[in-house]
Amino acid sequence: MKTIRNAARSTNRAVGASFFAVTTLLGITACSCLDTQYKIPRSLCGANVPQSVLESALPKGEKLTEHPESSGSTKRCRIHVDGKSVLSVSTERWEVETTASDVAQSALGVDPQDRRSNEGRYIYSSTGAVGKIDCTKANAVRAPMWATVRVTHHEATGADMLKLIRAYVKAVGFSPECSQ
Figure 1 (spheres, rainbow, N blue to C red):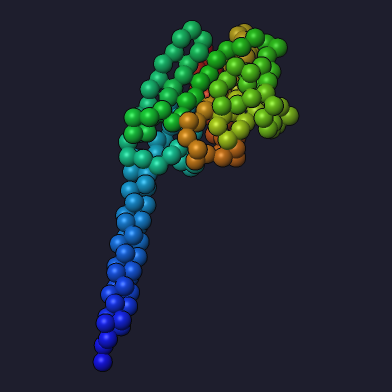
Figure 2: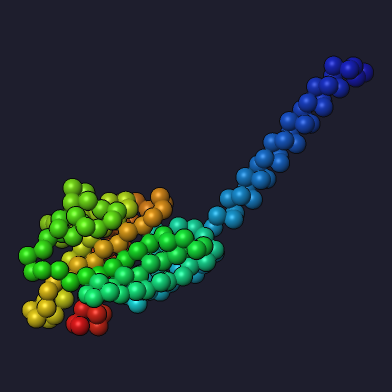
């Protein structure tokens, strides 16, 4: 025989179970909309960077667009996801004696004191990196070229940025831009 107390307990259990089911369902629904819905590009602003490297440096979202620009010897490209700038890459000619620390001094997202790789050829953090581009033929005639990459979201790691700067430097090194 049910008493009023037992009925109240049953009602509380039912309400609690319903609340748990609804909040779990809402959590699952919210998570599913955070997937990357755009297609990872096959190149980064014309530089053939592997999609796997790009994927780890880009946040989730629905729409990706590229926004290239240049001024003098600086070429820059910004990647937007859902209308927000999330990744910026650039190349620029510097003086012969320029070091990675010099480039990092003026770059956003990385400081001269951040982690180094390849005997100082790269300096990187979880938000940016700089690296020297190997333009062997062009370097004999023109000033050396340096690359910078920077993210404006918090999903990338230092390892992601190091992979990205290495891949971007390599791709630009094989591009026509390197011989200009």
